[in-house]
Amino acid sequence: MKKSLILLFLFIGIISCQENKPKGVWLKIKNKALTKKNGFTYYSMNSIMDFNKFERTNLLLTKDSIKYFEVNFKEKTISKKGGINNFGFKLYGKDSLEIYYEEDNLTEVFIPIYLNKKILLNKRQIVESLINREFYSANGDLKLNFSESFSNENSFEYGIKNERILKTQYLNNNESTGFWYIGEKDRNFFLILNFNFFEESVYHIETFDKDEIKLKGINTKGISDKITNLKTSL
Image (tube, rainbow, N blue to C red; front, side, top):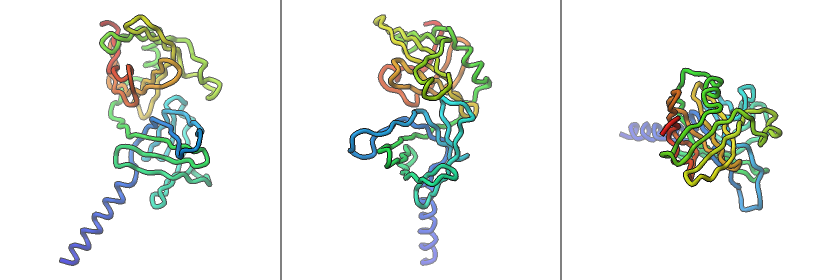
């Protein structure tokens, strides 16, 4: 009986340790201050932490921008591979992951994503299928025009051009200008919409047809939360 109890506690301990280890792929959805000090250093959004391959990428950037990292699960720290700086992290069950940067007074917040919607197209084909076309969404409340022209909003910061101009017309005939781009991770594709150069909304492309695209919102709010598909006609 005593031996059985010891084995049970060991088993529970092993399971608990496993639950405290982030697994799979995680997408950053938010930056926030680490402490109540004024201000924090802003890190780019839509970063992906892949704990299967121990690599960090960004949906906006090209594949050659991959950065590799190491994890000390015992100390609960993450560091750049071969780097000397360690950053603490905390896992909140299977729901969210936070990484802490004390020097920058920054907390990065990640949520898990599941790469289970592979599409038999490449990124170029998807981009070309959207360029210079209009789509309706949110039950006709939105009309989106995917321009071919590049936005200059972040081209200086990143040194590349991936963001193209997005023009949005609302039900009340108001219009806004932002940008759009396609991100890729392991043949799963993500549509990023920015309606006004402030907040980016991230959608996982579930199916992609010429006249209808089905989307799953990952990081959305407000009107962007209503977008579940894009159609060429109402």
